[in-house]
Image (cartoon, rainbow, N blue to C red; front, side):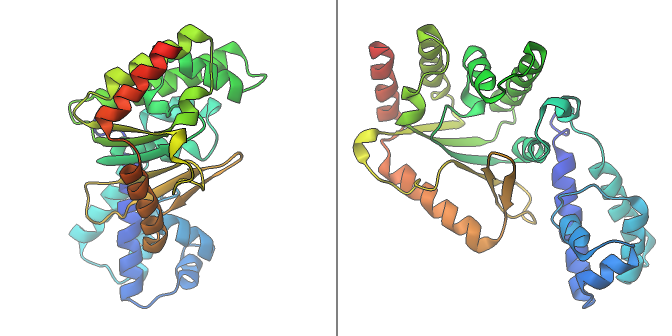
Length: 286
């Protein structure tokens, strides 16, 4: 995975935020902007959030509408639009990916800090190949072996980000339930526990376990991921995966609630050293 490949998603977000600022500065409504490019108000909203690709003609027309006549400024934004449409490395896996997931892979690859709470199973970035295969088989009932292997290959490709020279910071909180619930046979689970012990000692990884003994906690709403980016123009994004879709939340008040929940999870869970001891104990029992 090259450093620049995940950038297409972030470039869409950057371009969208700049188009939104230009529109608001001119006092133009989304409806009026949509009319100018023969699109709906919701299409403008998706463009400004970086959720869709950009047609060069649409960007040109919007810049004209917003009064941007300086050629250098126009070319800078048009160049960003062209770069934003470059397909990421994950594009070749879209045949086995749900429609909402490629956007997440792009955000994950561009983030400088990834904070996660997981309860159902070990997070994909921390899974061994054998454990990932067991998880994918369970989630893709009836899928061909070839499709299962392609999904596993994608997961392993994503994990290269964890070990790259420019890897971001990762803060994981895994519920003990994710470690107790078996995927695969005994050896698969033992291998997964040992892998977590090993990965947790990397300098860019902070891994904590929320034990059963703590009782109720702030992660009651289920698994979620908070992604932060190095560019100050990009707000944090909360990713919530559902059975048939996913939500990407970037409103400040929404993000703040999830960040508070994660902060409490980190405070209430044993620290990384104690969590490693917990993992070693589970390994001995397995």
